[in-house]
Image (tube, rainbow, N blue to C red; front, side, top):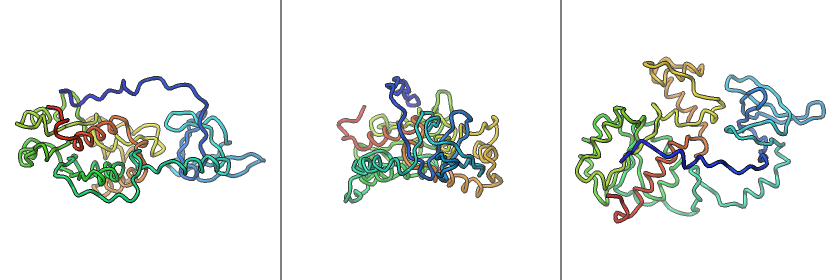
Length: 293
């Protein structure tokens, strides 16, 4: 079973051509000016010289103004930016749609959290757990699934043995950097060789060195994550490249909180993480009879 591959080809179908959607210039919306490459969050819309302009603030706090209309992109897709008042009718239409959770699921109003199942989702660390909770927390409470950080997977096989998984006590494990030939892939293979694991344990992963990288750079107004030279601590290198404090663990913790705050929904995460988490949730909520051998 190849656990580290996820089919991007399933998402590669060419979208149908259509007119650029209209986006209201609401404060906080991150836009990219296609002509200059300027990326920033909307801070205000105003009239200048008889024209409506939108002011965008980049991650360094610098502000530039651009005329409303076409010529903007969000996550690489062309959009037409309009003044908030012009989108009032569109907002009314959206308000009539079913409310959704951060994961995109329909929100079930008035539903209480289910008593926790014996099954668990294990992730490598605290940041992974916080990210999963922020996007899928509502869904997981409805399903009664608890997310637990492991503090690393070096002894994953031993932890799984201690947990003693079974048909009513299953495990889904989300691993960083689960790619062919990596240390993580060897640990996963060893763990899945345990008795009972193929039916009751699912190990999946994303290709990133750290879960920070599973957040789309555009969520932070970036074109891409800073390049970190091989052999340098990834978090330290990213913080340094962003011009953020990077001297100690407290700096890393504050940096992560800034990144996490920029995540509002599944749309701010890379598909290679989204698919894996959804797969784990499906595995843990399926009836034992439907589980793969």
